[in-house]
Amino acid sequence: MNKLPLTVAVSGLNNTDNPGPGIPFIRAAKESGRFELKIIGLAYENLEPGIYMRGMTDAVYKMPYPSEGKVAFLDRIRYINDKENIDVLIPNLDAELHTVMISEKELGELGIKTFLPTLKQFEERHKSELEKFGEKYGIKVPRSFPVSSVSDINRIPKDFDFPLMVKGKFYDAHIAYNKEQVISHFNKISAQWGVPVIVQEFIKGTEVNVIALGDGEGNTIGAVPMRKQYITDKGKAWGGITISDQNMIDLTRNLIAAVKWRGGMEMELIKTINGEYYLIEINPRLPAWLYLAVGAGQNLPEAMLLMALGEKVPPYTSYDIGKMFVRYSYDMMVDLDDFQKISMNGEI
Image (cartoon, rainbow, N blue to C red; front, side, top):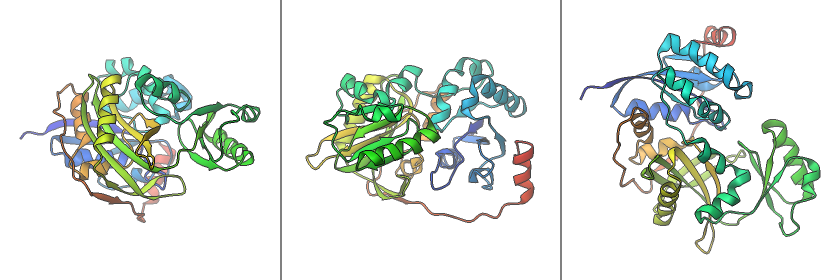
């Protein structure tokens, strides 16, 4: 089979204790066998490990922070595209998705394709809107209260019992057992990720997750549920196992059909002792543990790239149950010259 030449720009190279999906996405794409790949890494920090991982990228470019806006983003992408001729752009970080979505027209004019949720889909699943989302689509969701200032904490409904979850609008989540801890978590999270910070009911049960991919027409191209086996102090899965749970699969398929979700997603759920499922978060992109789905038989990055190119992709119908992943740290030796190039020139 002739391989399809493809230049793919991928962000999320922060393969640390708070990992991004970039490196597992690249691994999956390279293993698909469908493409002759040139991988362009997009980095925000000089010490993102993916910059220096040999064999992962063919070139790496520093990007302006998403807070700098659409103009800065497009200026940089045009510069990179002039040199690399990008076919598909895969943004992997929540904070950059909005900027990419509102730039799709300009990206299309450059010949750069994406495969992302619509702006409406992205906006309505925000943590601050999740209760309305649950009501609209018939999914149980913990009650939430948006907090934009310390004074707002005094207005949290009295029937919100401790413990409570305190969450950032992009990342970060902590349990609070009293009002003082709510204030402490609010100050920390808002300083890093801005407001609103979301205070959410704590649902007792087992956290389970589903990775999924929708085609934008209501069809689920792939879905793999897993249970976290080991969780870091940042709440990130450092080990997980695929599980057999048809209820989770059905919930995912029904939601994708109702929303007509386009692109990757991760549904974070709590399964109670009574077997009820509460949706606590929808991440609008493939998660950092996406390689577990690949190992279980569903190469969702391959399918996403093909759909970005306009191809019809048949849905995956099965996955391996009991497949585990375990993350590990690894010390790379890096030439100072490489670090200086990315620091001084913004590219390698």
